[in-house]
Length: 247
Image 1 (tube, rainbow, N blue to C red):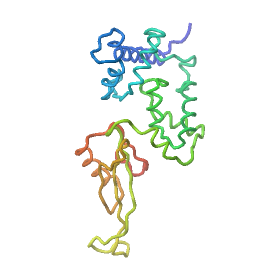
Image 2: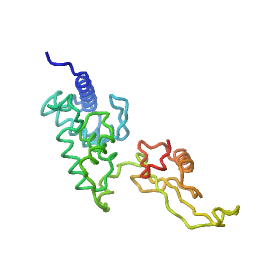
Image 3: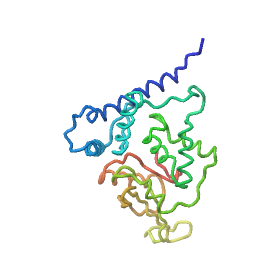
Image 4: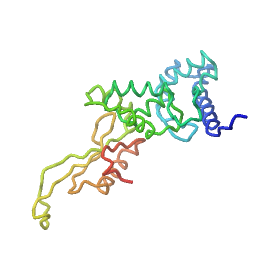
C-alpha cells in the first residue's frame, strides 16, 4: 500500500484554494457581471490594490495576470486554474522544472536581480506554490552558483514595482568627517558621518533620510519610523547589508 504523503495532500489543498481564489477574481468576467466598459478595465480596477490570497498574504497583481487566468479558464475550465502537480511530489526538491528554467532565464537576463524579486516574479507567473520563500530561491541560486555581473539600467527598470510604496530600499552613504562639538574620539576631533536613507523602488524618491555619526540598526530604525509615518508601511523592505538589518 502506498505511503500516505501528508505534505503532498497539503500542497494539493493549497493549490485548490488558490484555484478558487483565481476563479473568484475572474468570475464576474466569465459570468458577464462587470459594469466596467471592458474586461481589462475590470482587471485594472481589481488590481489597483493588493489582493488577499488564501494563505492570508496580500499581493499586488498585474491586470495581465488576471487576463491570463481567464484565458486558462477558457481553454481548460476550472481545473486549468490549479497549479500543475509535479511528478516528484513528496521528494526533497521544492522547485519545479519550469521554475528552475525561469530562474536561470531571469539570472541571465537580469544578473543582479535579488531572490526576493525572483520569488515575486515566480509567484506572479504561478510557477511556484503560494508560501514559497525567497530563501528557497536564494539557496538554489547559491547551490547552482548562478551569480551575475554588474547590472545595467535595464535591469533596474524591468523589475521595479509598478506603484509607489510597495518596496523601500535602504542605503547608507559615507559623508565627510565633521566636528561634533564634543570630546575627541580615537584621538580625533572630527567624526565620520553617514547618510542613512530609504528610497521608494518605483519612483527612486528618497522617502526618508538623516545624518548620523553611527551606521547601525538603531539609527536605521529611526529613519524607518519617520518614513512610515510620512508615507506609509511598505510591503517589502530591502536591506542589502545584513549586518545592519534591524530585527
